[in-house]
Amino acid sequence: MKGLLIVSGLGILAMMAEIFKFKKLLFPLVLLGILGAYVANFMEWNSGFSIAVFDNMIAFDKVALAFSGVILATAFFWFIMANDYFEDMPTVVDHFSLVLFALTGALMLTAFKNMTTLFLGIEIMSIPLYVLAASKKKDVKSNEAGFKYLIMGSFASGFLLFGIALVYGATGSFDLMEIRAKISEMGSGMPSFFYAGIIMMLIAMLFKVSAAPFHFWAPDVYQGSPTVITALMSTVVKTAAFAAILRLFMIAFGGVSESWSMVLASVIALSLVIANFSAAVQTNVKRTLAFSSISHAAFMLMVVLANLRSNATLDALLYYSLAYSIGSIAAFGIIYNVTKNGDETFDSFNGLGKRNPLMAACMVVAMLSLAGIPITAGFFAKYFVFTTMIGTGYKWLLILAILTSAVGVYYYFKVIIAMYFKQATTEEPVTIELSQKVVMILTTLFTLALGAVPGFVAEMFKF
Amino acid sequence: MGSTNTPTDYLPIVLMFIVALGFVVTTMVASHMLGPKRKTKIKLDSFECGIESHGNARLPFSIKYFLVAILFVLFDVEVIFMYPWAVNYKELGIVGVIEVFSFIALLLVGFYYMLAKKAVQWED
Image 1 (cartoon, chains in turn cyan, orange):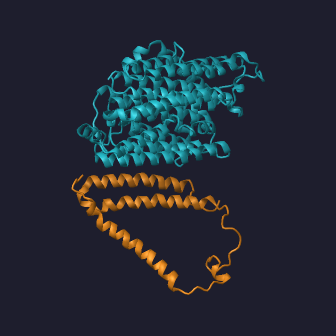
Image 2 (image 1 turned 90 degrees about the vertical axis):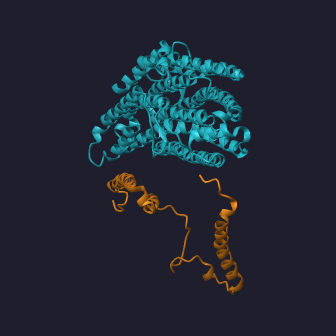
Image 3 (image 1 turned 60 degrees about the vertical axis):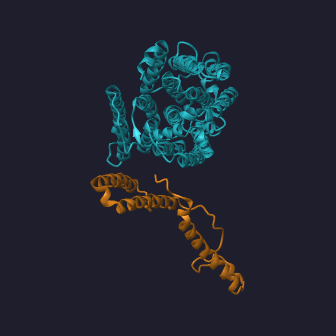
C-alpha cells in the first residue's frame, strides 16, 4: 500500500517540478522515490500483514506485493535506461509524471479486490500510455501509434465494462470474493449471461496483454512509440496486466474455469503460431520484439490456464515476468542506442560485435534469454511454465509451445548473426551513456544469475 | 443489494421516458404538420447570427479550443462528485469532509499545473 501511495505522490511531485524549478533534481528524486517504494513494499512483504483498505477495494497481500516488487524493480531500471532520452526534452517533467501515473495504475492492478478498482487501475495505467505512445509529436508513426492505441484501448475498455456489468447482474456484487462465493453457492445455476460477461472480460484483458487474435494494435504501437516507451509497455504494463488476469480469473472466476479455459487455450495456441511466424518475417527490430512479446504473453497465459493447481503457478508467473522484464529492459536499452540514427532494421545491428563489443555481448544474453536458451533466466522461466502445464489436460499446447519456440530461436538469432557475422557499413563505434551501460550490465548479470540459481529466486517467492 | 426489486418498480421511470420522448416527438411532428411551409433561398441558408455564411465549416481551428473544452469537462466532472457528498454531508461526517477536500486538493494541483503551463493564456 505504501508503495502505491509513494508512487502516486511522486507523480504529483513530478508535475510540479518545472513550476517550482527543481527540474534538475527530478530524476534523482524519482529514482529515490521508486527505491523508497520498493523498500516499503519489501518491508510490508516481510511483516506479512495486509489489510484491505477503501471499503475492501484494494488489498496488498503477498501475491500483490510480489508483483509490485517486480514492477517497481523493473521501473527503477527503466528510469535509469530512459533518462538519456528524456534528459534534453523541454517536457521531461510531463513525461515523468505520466510514466509515474501509469505505474500507479500498474500497482493498483496487482492488488485490486473489486471490479471497480480493476477498471480504475486499467484506465489509470492506459491513459498515460496513450499519450506517451504519441509523445514524438512530429513523427507520423508515433501519432499513428498513439491514435491506434487510444481507439483500440477504449474499445477494449468498453468490453471490460460490459463484462463487469453482466457479471454484476448475475452475482449482484463487484467484490471478487463475493462473486466467488456466489458462484460456489449457485453452482451450475448461473444465468447464461454471466458466462457472456466472463468471456467479455477475458477479451478485454487479452487485448491489454495483446494476445492473438486481439494483437493487431501491438506491432504498430510498439514500432511507432519512442523506443523507451515501448520498453515500458512490454515490461511494466505486461507484468501488471498479467497480475490482474491471474487475480481476476483465479479468485473470482476460478470456480467456473471450465467455461473459459477452452477459449483461453485456443487464444494461446493462436498467439503462439501467429506471433512466432509473423515475427520471423519482420525486418524491423521493434516490430519483431512486438511479435515476440505476443508469444511471451501466450506463455504467461498458460500459467493462468494451469491455475489453481498449486502455488507453483504463481511462482512460475512471477519468475516469468521478472525474467522477461529484465531481458526486455536490456534488449530495448540496446535497441534504443543502436537505432538512434533512425534505422530500425536488423541491418542497424550489422557489425555491432566490433563497434561495441560490450553492448553486443549484453544483447546476446538478452536475446538468448528471450529465446529461452539454457543458463539464462528465460530458459527456466519457460521450464517453470511447462512444469505447471504438465498436470493439466493441455499437453498438446505444450508441444505446440515447444515447436513454436524453435521458430522463435530463428528470429532472435537474426540479431546475433547481424552483430557478429555481417559487415558493418560504418566502423565508428556506437556510444552509450555510462548510466545506461550500468543498467545494461546489471540486467545482463541479473539475467545470468536468475538462470544460474533459479531455485533461489523461486524459493524467495514462496508464499 | 435489495433483492425485492421487481421490474414493475421501474414503471415510473419508463413512464417518465415515454413522456419526455413523447413531448419532443409530438411537438416536432405537430409543428411540422401544422405550420405553413414557404421555402426561399434565404430561409434555407444556415443561420449564423445574421452574418452571411460563406465557405466550408470544416476548417482547422486552434487547438486552444479543444484545450478549453477538455478543461471544461474536467472541472465539470469535479462538480458532479460534489453533489452526492452534499446530499450525504451529515451521514459521511468528518471522514467525508477529509476525503472530499483531499480530492479537491489533488484537483487544485492539476488546476495550478494548468495555469502554470499557460494552458489558458491565449496570446504568446
